[in-house]
Length: 334
Image (cartoon, rainbow, N blue to C red; front, side):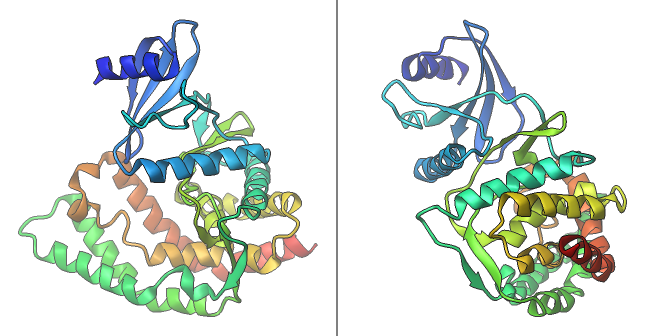
């Protein structure tokens, strides 16, 4: 593979690689850090999925970049394409920094909020779909969630032996299924919320931080409308941050204030619904509790830690939801 990649880099991109290092990240891509003959660093993504979907995602990243959002810059092929379709692969500038996984604190809250607001303001202009309002119960189909949990619980029950993590996931799935009615009630009590084109997978691994700033938003999904409150919750209620202590509550308020400064058209209803949306969505999600059944190869020590953090964070948000709603409402209106 390395020989083929070397040839593609030189033929398609005019890049002569002197160093190729596999990066263990990504599920639909095989990733490499590339150093060329001039000492410049690049990030190569070799695709396993549909190249046309990947092309649409890159185009969305470029759309955001032209609107002033910090994203990694894609290098075009010698023929002018965003993807070399023969391999298929794309080549990006290498972004120095660290992911936002459990690392949002201090001034980073405002920095993340400002970039997220700028991102949503820009993507609201995307021609694929105009912003609209939809009932909040569409954030998560609670009936289908119940079916998913039943499948997971029955799948574990049918196994003759469970690993310690599988046994924990089984018990967590039963606990979360018992809370689905509460998740549905949380969504039913919310007003209509805004849907628009968003990043689509703005979890903390896809937000690169450097010092106190956002270095880049990476790994966009193809353009599709989702709830803005849901996407803000992906970052503002990141499980690995929530489980560190109550500091995330004030931090989230700072994020939302900075978000609103960058995106003045954002509705207060959407901002106030962020924690409720994140809580209900997470409670009703079987990921990654189902991974030992659905994709055993994906179960790593890191994923196990994330599963526990995500479960604990959902329960924390559920427990303090009234307090957080009041606190954030006060900050937004003062």
